[in-house]
Length: 165
Image 1 (cartoon, one colour):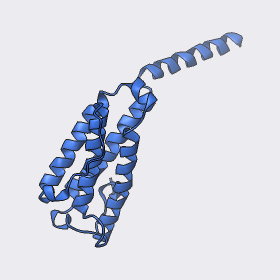
Image 2 (spheres, one colour):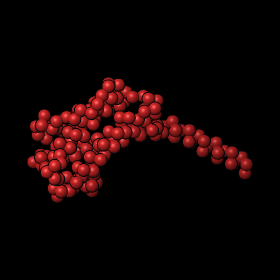
Image 3 (tube, one colour):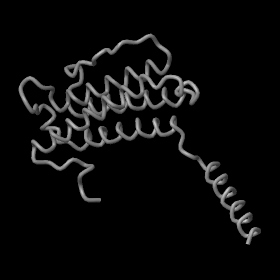
Image 4 (cartoon, helix red, strand yellow):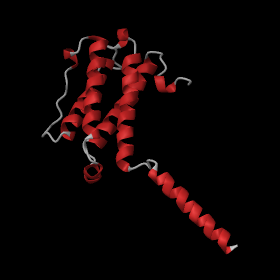
């Protein structure tokens, strides 16, 4: 019976070691995936939302749908520059500089690609010491993702993530 217990323990340790070697999630890996995930959801919405509604506002004092997308992209621009080690402050991109859905989507895609490339170059050790600006921008984008859901619902539309799969 003792031999069976020892063999079982050895097998469990071997399986655990094998699983750990196959890409166990690290904090850095999880953050990169979450950062990319929220950006992908926003990009999907930016591409999906009707172009005719890009000027829609929930209230007169709020940003348009397109303006929210540009605002989210501004966060990615900030993160990309900070991730490259540049001394940076938040510079808000002006939605008026991006005419129409295609220009706004292209700007968002570029900001995502730049931020992802910058984030990939941040070492796990460096990220373990300082999660800024990545955590701030990820939280910022997620908050605005929720706002974009409201824009969808106010227009009688179902957000992509809420649609049956």
